[in-house]
Amino acid sequence: RPGGRTLLPVVWPPLLPLLLLLGPGLGCPSDCLCWSPNRTVSCSSRGLEALPRGIPAGTRALDLSGNRLDWGPARGLSRRLEELELGHNRLRELEAGALGGLERLWRLGLGHNLLRYLQPGALRGLAALRSLELAGNPLLLLSDHTFRGLAALRTLSLGSPELASTNSPSAAPRWPGRPDLSSPPSSI
Image 1 (spheres, rainbow, N blue to C red):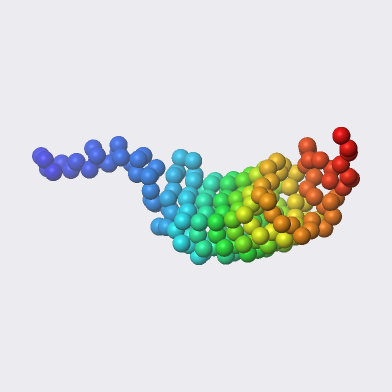
Image 2: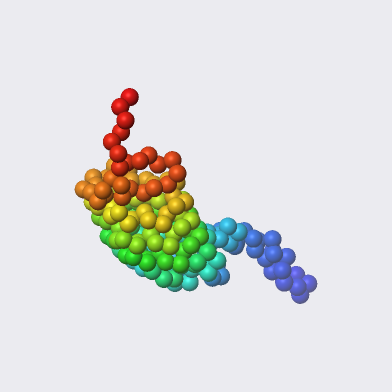
């Protein structure tokens, strides 16, 4: 305090943007890192067993990978969410409506979990979904309703699953550029 004045106003304003970019801050869950300019929240590899409370309402990208989550989030996610990473958790199933209300979601990472199947309607309402990661799961069954309503889907990563059934070849997802799997391939 030289001359009776505090140095805080001189030091604080230049550091404020850096502090907002670097770490947990106002409105950020204590187990997460938040970056306000691009509205990204990372709660990766924190040993979480539940969705952290206090995820900012305007979050556009949320990384919950590498935790101990064994459920698909049903509530508590921003309706503005565009990217959701749930890979490397303990998800066993994704219930119908688990991602309801996420109309803007265009990327969903569910890879490397314990998913054996997706319940019909699990992806319902995700009309903007363009990329879906399912690789690394012990998927056994994809029902004929799994991809219904996903007209924007362009990238589907299954890895090398050992699917027992897709119900029927004609049940496979239909989107522009997808070959018709309901008829035998033509000979070359």
